[in-house]
Amino acid sequence: MNRIEILLSLFALCGSLFSIAQDNKKELDKESIKSMCGCFEIDFDYTETFSPDTNYQFHKDYHAHADAEYAFVVEEDENHIVIQHLLIIGDEMIIKHWRQDWIYENTEFWEYDNDFAWKYVKKSEEEVTGQWTQKVYQVDDSPRYQGSGTWVHVDGKHYWESTSYSPLPRREYSKRSDYNILVRGNRHEVTDYGWLHEQDNSKLLRNENGDKILAQEKGYNKYYSQPVSKCQAAIEWWEKNEEFWAMVRGQWDVIFSDKKDLTMKKFVEEKMMWEEVFGLGSQFSEGEIKKKAAKAGVIDVIDKFTV
Image 1 (cartoon, helix red, strand yellow):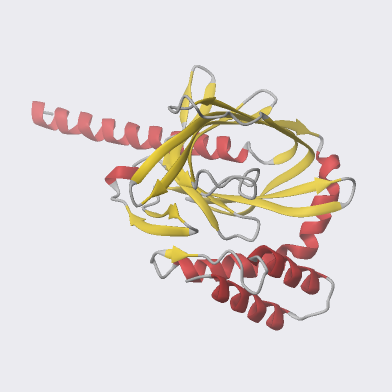
Image 2 (cartoon, helix red, strand yellow):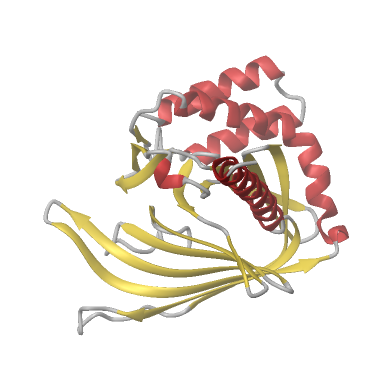
């Protein structure tokens, strides 16, 4: 074998080893993402830390606690993992909570702009190589925010970070009018107690004059692993409601397939979208309406709330 043949063989070997390493890295990424599944007790803590305006009056710290939330995979393929969260209140009251989709090397984004409007953004494959996009959805599966980043596995730590524009958080959207966009600095880290959603956020006022930072805040959402038996009520609830929410996700997939900017109406006939969707879900799970009527109802509700 001459020198050129040896070099070609070495290049081929290096390429093969790199491909194996990439495959192993991707599998480790997926394991970390699915570590956010299970039954959890949660503490939510937020504090405002800084404002460029010396006259700004800092708001009180925020703390909330959830005794049990069940997170589980509802869809999965090689490049896509869908995790649904169900909040358990008391022993039996179940609330369909937020949803997070993880997509490998995703190039299509809906970036929050303002006033319940999202801009469609197309990125190049080079921009997202090796990255996972987290797409976060509201309780009715309408969009919330989306960010992309690379999972990092180093020194025994496993974490992912991104920054994205978002509507006001649920804890403030009905209480605050002095800002209209939350710039989310998200960090998801697998921990020995479960997982941590750490946030470094900026509260932004966006208008025709540009963007102005009102204040910054620090957030810690700690998810403590619990025995799955504490979430049994949620497991049983999903068995009755899974088919309906698959219909809802399917209709949103139709909307997103248009690959256009999206604007949502906050109210239609004095109702919010989640109220109507949840109502349809209850009717379907209780047998008051059949699948055909439920699907038609979902299409009608989403259509009248979207532009």
